[in-house]
Length: 236
Picture 1 (tube, helix red, strand yellow):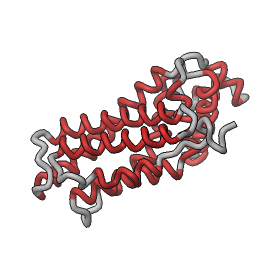
Picture 2 (picture 1 turned 60 degrees about the vertical axis):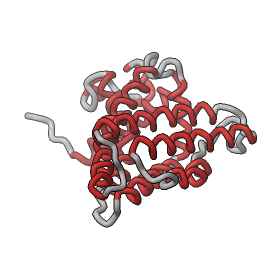
Picture 3 (picture 1 turned 30 degrees about the vertical axis):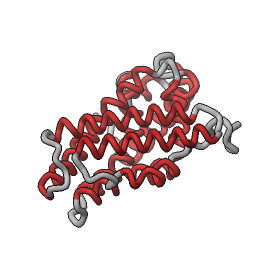
């Protein structure tokens, strides 16, 4: 007789396994982590593990889903709001992304450490690929709306959206680099320059009115923090 599965219990146990794997990746790196490490950390059998994940790659996909699902849910809500014009929608999307990061600073601190671990190249590439594939269609919706409203003139919305999503990942990389240095005035200036450059490029790609996005620079740069960064009070 087939084993009956309670969906809620199944999802909860799966999330528990992923949380343990997330910690292991921080300590060892994805490439170096083994299924045996996971079994030992959770105190479960191989058969129990394979009830939830059929491979190490499935673990990778689960971690990526865990890292991205919540953030993209917030973005989806902004994009689908019929009361917002395109520029407001894009500004709200950018501000919402920052607000989400501020609310998840502990998780992002862990992600920043994972991002820089030499044994996490595969994980980083997978997250990047999924992020671009998920974000680009949402950004394209905003661009098409902006073209219809006459506020954006990007000729190829889908391609522009893919470029913008990729630029956002590169901005994140650069910001993580900035946060691996001790806090000082130059690092704060660097953070604002990075955000300003990204928003200027965004305006030019979209053909948006100057300052329609770069006016958010101080708000975004000031809100982006990582708990536990070198030189911070939380570090230790």
